[in-house]
Image (cartoon, rainbow, N blue to C red; front, side, top):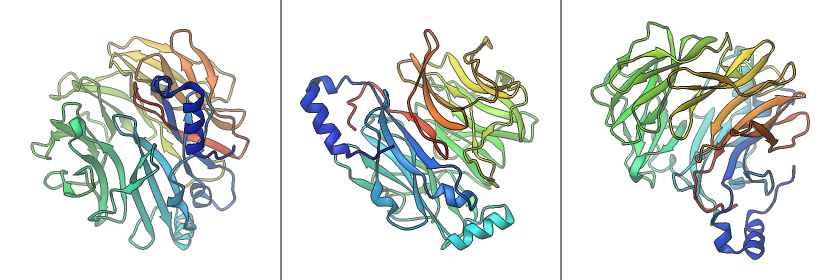
Length: 393
């Protein structure tokens, strides 16, 4: 697929439809494109990753923040949007190729300073300005998980410090970084903030915790399972959604913010809970494939095993389950994400051996394919632009 100049697209759009009409165009979609079959293992393919933005009709696809990958063995990944949809969050990684070979041999990560550098930047889609917020007053060589805090209060992120991953916050300009992991914190990930900004949640040593926004009054959500992973707040902030069980066999659970009414929401039918994104051996076994909330918080979308397939499902909070896809044998679906207006579901689908992005109209379940990659290429980690907002490629 060709890379297109973003400025030229925007000028053409304004000339064609006018600035006022452009404000009401469909939301954009951000995702990551990559090679999937290059020899050499994980790193050889991961370093082909590029952050991409497209219109939701599949046109105008172009890479963003290309200046971040001028160095060999570096890559970008689309990681999210600002609440107003004007900025993209783009992660940039680099790894020493000798370290990558060591990781392949030992089948484990070695994310040490000098061997890895991982940062997260804010990219203004109108001006193209890139701000590496994790490099300002740097606290770590590895900084992931950047997201916007509610009410413009700053940014959350998860730096790796002395081998420990710690939920942290910073101002919008990247300054005033501070740890909110609480006392005696273990290795934490999946960090997010409740919509009212009062509480945080994350999994620490594969157990879910809720705490005040500053990390105080940390509470363990006890499921009795050894693997609790990736809590996500409902849009009203009343519930947490996460997966619980054992690694490779877990199911969606919900619990109220006060720790009550814990219950299993659906059954994944033995689905392992992760999607392989490469067609060569990947010692890390791909990417987590997690349930997500609908925009109004009344439904949860998830993937589950059906025969040889991984199909899409939805369930109400009360547990009313419906299968959304019924596809040919061998099809895999992954990474569902719901549109802000509640009408559409965006997801990945591996059909005919290629990982493409697809949009479903939830009213009638009709699908349209967003990408058209050739074998050996793929699309991963899709994100709807927040809506309603000006769509500015």
